[in-house]
Image 1 (tube, helix red, strand yellow):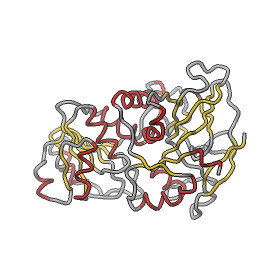
Image 2 (cartoon, helix red, strand yellow; image 1 turned 180 degrees about the vertical axis):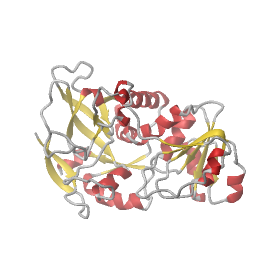
Image 3 (tube, one colour; image 1 turned 45 degrees about the horizontal axis):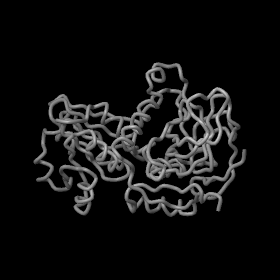
Image 4 (tube, one colour; image 1 turned 30 degrees about the vertical axis):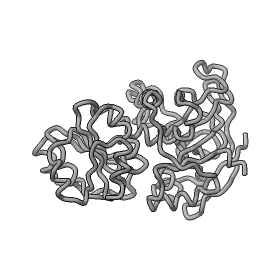
Length: 349
């Protein structure tokens, strides 16, 4: 089936309208008419070939929400008309230890929503900047938010799970002091989620102008990381720090804020490596420097249900498809509060 999409034919070319082909639903497939798709910084890195291995044409998008328009003969859990989402994963091996424990995101055979090998034409996956998508039922997620919030739910499929998973893994909750570094697309979700989990949340920003915005998101305290006195006041006091900043920066400034057995976890995907930290800042307090990548399908469903229960959505700016290139430039300048979301109805022109 031919559908309208927005993608790029080369890394140095702007995104433009194009037609792509979607397979007919097989027995375990769900076909989804996409209502909205969030824009992630990963989309920009991949479509501009800043990360290796980009296949063209490249149609990005892995923050997908919409309605089921068809189901395969053996699909039991979804019906036509259901509100659903698709995140960063559309397939995996299904039988390794990671898959069997619901951690498909760490499967060596994980297939991402775009730019990953697939038997479907053209030979690699094409993402959510399109009118519809066909996905195996295992990787389809149920949305329980009100339909009026659907556009703002879209970024939860990447930004939401990317921050929720490490917060849960490192036991954010009452009695825990949690730091969130960066108040962008990822960071604003981290603050909201940690607050809803009952933790004492401290937001770190390089900008004095973002102090009030961080408090409005749910931060109990806000630290301007360029202020040495403010940073020193929090030395050796954090149970966990979630670092959402992708740009290379000094990790030692945050490692020294961890108490014994505290963890600093990186979730921002950098275009170039961070400077290596001072090992003594790790060994002297048995601190941990870790990473985390999105989340598995069961945990992503758990995150969506948690957000629906607590009334959590992303703060977004809704755009037309013909504004995608402009939004990329604005995203590079930090000129978005906090996530762009495409109205996929505008793909039709």
